[in-house]
Length: 206
Image (cartoon, rainbow, N blue to C red; front, side, top):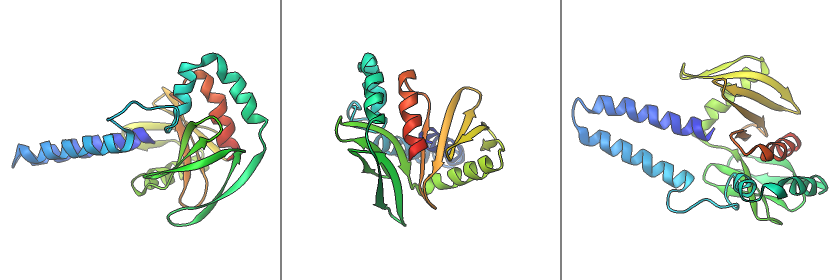
């Protein structure tokens, strides 16, 4: 869904740039600069990402490939605990392994293991993204494919424990789960291979 957001920003900026070129190139430059500022604010351009950030597990896996299996086993041994979260529009409940919390970010939360200081995938309430989430969710319930802007095809693959799986443009896997009326958990499996099982375990039990 991070890709969805940035792709939309690119397409909108290109459209506006083409329109604005009829009157002034400065407006187009401003739009592209705004898009860049947004991307940096959202995903960070001023520092290297760490294990503590969103999807920090991927960094941990890259740096410690031989430790991932044992880490996963340790997570599975932890008690699963239900946690109530007061979101922007509602209170919702998630199930997390012991010593996991939800850390606040601009468009929602992300899973965080405070015992190992490692970040995982997001649970979002982004107004810009919710339309895409709802359209994807409704398509998945009907076991139908979904096409974003008539360009990017999300091919429905299966559903398991409330998690819907799509293949995007036949290249990589996208998984999402509806947590409440407004909140969705998701991740794109452009991850280190060793990380897949951990992400799958967490979202399926969420």
